[in-house]
Amino acid sequence: MAKVKRHRTESPHLRLNSRTAECLAYGLLILLLGVWQLSPRGWPAVCGGRPLLLVPLVVAVAMFSGPVGGAAAGVAAGVLWGLFSEALFGFHALMLMLLGCAVGLLVRLLLRNNALSALLLCGGGTAVYALADWLCNCVLPHPDGALLLLWRTVLPNTVYTLVLCLPLYGVVRGITKLLKNRERVN
Image 1 (cartoon, rainbow, N blue to C red):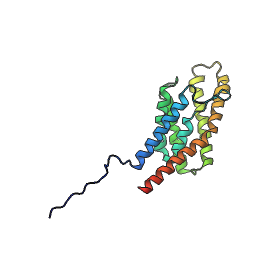
Image 2 (spheres, rainbow, N blue to C red):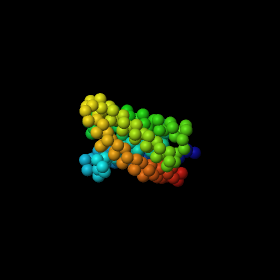
Image 3 (tube, rainbow, N blue to C red):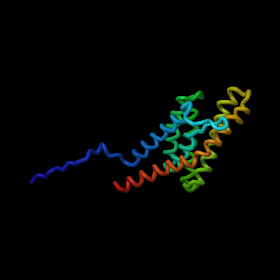
Image 4 (cartoon, rainbow, N blue to C red):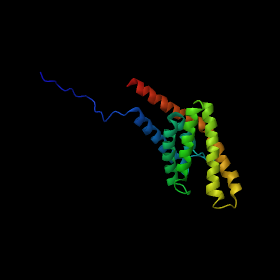
């Protein structure tokens, strides 16, 4: 008797594995928040500051995806940011990649993945990122008025970003839990 081959009823191309679904979800979130951050009237200015949404997003993604996922999210967010920035192209990608990799390593090796760690890592990462951006893009090219720019723009941006760190951490945590539950069901 000849064996009869059984064909699957569903196409193997339609099913996403968990890593692909995670990358797609984080990519869409980076795109959405990046466009929202970079739009002229996306967020209201408070005390002259606007939030840097991509920095806490990269921190949160790195906390759940590890150093490689954090670095990849940092590069993607940085390239998107660099397309619409006046800074040297690649500056944001390099800084966010380093931040994502460092946060991913810290969470994997030293820290627990909880809200307090997210707030501390986001605060430290945002402060380091903002000061490096200020130094490289404000002080070095135009030293006149750099301290005034630090006081009126960089510090309010940093504080405004800190306020949004925990909600963004919660969104990334929810996406991660949703994808883990989806994986268990399948």
